[in-house]
Length: 263
Ligand code: ADP
Ligand code: MG
Image (cartoon, rainbow, N blue to C red; front, top):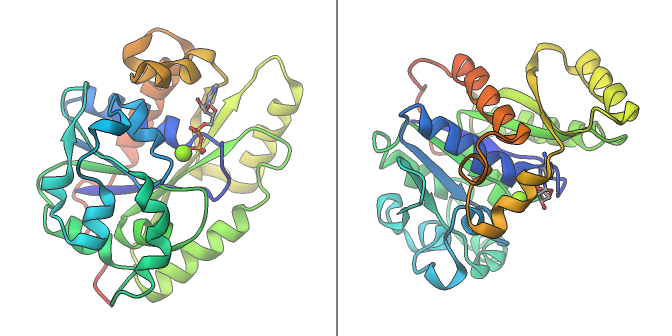
């Protein structure tokens, strides 16, 4: 299983929107996809149609209760796309996990037990570099970083890359950067053009060619509990996520390397 952490400690950059719509686009190619909602806000769960009252099992049970991933995962309205929902109690998990042995490897352990159940897992990380994001990075083969096309886009990226470097050294030497995806691109705004050119100049080939446009359909879809790709599959946002999925598939390692070894 290819495990991809979608991470950026900034909030509101498009992590969740990317997890939902990239997951849907990948599932449409026939891949078996698992979205793991690691954000206590649970927006990926809501956006994939799992209402708060329907969340009986969650990633909290996996991380702290040793529930098998296959038991915590539930199907969504998208064929071949399952999700492990997040519930509000996940907000306490960062603190509760501190007491646990091998607290950084809880997710890694859980995923190792169901390696052939899905082809790809997308982990929707919370907007912080705390224990939940660390668990995601230790469990992942690679990282997808959404970067909002705004003036301070690159600010904070060095902190993120520093964290990735420490995780490589200590826990997960194979962790790679699969790509940086520019989001909320507005072609009528010259500043976003400039930002995207700057980001490409600094980061080079790691930046996906596909840019995700600012598109109101992408922000409307979650209130209907649907991915934009189902809510309106022809909107510019949906088309962009399909293009991003195509680009991403080419970058995926053919056979996924084994996930991180336990410390
Ligand atoms: P994060 O998970 O990084 O906090 P979200 O994916 O939740 O970010 O996006 C933040 C807000 O912006 C949400 O309301 C979302 O619907 C909206 N949004 C995300 N991407 C786009 C986009 N490309 N165009 C318009 N709105 C977007
Ligand atoms: Mg989010």
